[in-house]
Image 1: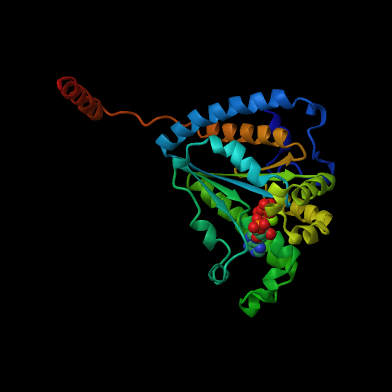
Image 2: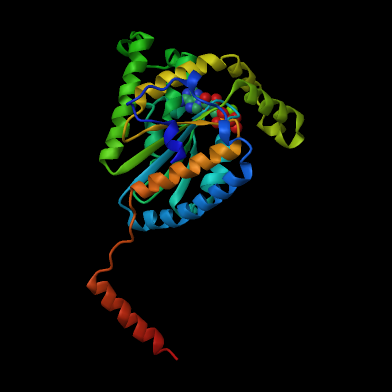
Length: 290
Ligand code: ATP
Ligand code: MG
């Protein structure tokens, strides 16, 4: 599938400066891809129904990106086709006071799906090695000296390992984690910020903090690259998707979700002889009603 070109499972290293932010040769095929996406959404719908009924595996799909890369829109357009009964979206914002009193995975545990369910993470525990590392937020946490005395390198290397173990733990307990990074160009981010400023209906999306973060655009990409390489694995791969054309990103995400669901090979639970007999009796009873 097309999205395989953007998949990182730890075997090859990810170099963001060499990876495209745009659709390349596919540019100009918007209508074609919109149709393909619609077809994938149909497939997703029936696969998810079987996945939900089956209840043997659970799934976390997480999205990470710099501001205005299209996380919200992707969730709305691609995941909107799923049956809400089996899907929950969680937004990971700045931790609350209570959340900060706990370890960083504490708030994640409560957002994990049951088997048969899908949790979509809009940002995730990866913020705890991204924004926290970039702004040295951990230095302000109340933690024991033995933890705070570690060098930044040690502190975050440990967190990468903890995350890898956490994802392995989930996989070994019948959950899959699919990780998506929306790779946006600095030029396209500027256009999207300007649109937020110039279009009244988009004003609400504008945040002055986004502009200060933009000043560190390249630093963020370097950090993302480090984090992706430290945490990509066969069972919890990263997909680094070009994000400059929303229609192309959405198509790729729809492909990834279809494939992830297919890998679980969902099947409806088998009906036992006893249940079959009960159904037959119920049928007779219903038919006899009038
Ligand atoms: P949009 O792209 O629409 O602005 P958003 O995901 O940026 O959406 P916001 O409410 O603007 O949503 O921002 C949430 C903020 O919370 C982000 O800046 C993110 O970095 C921050 N955040 C998330 N997790 C943590 C964390 N563990 N520690 C510190 N900050 C965090
Ligand atoms: Mg924001």
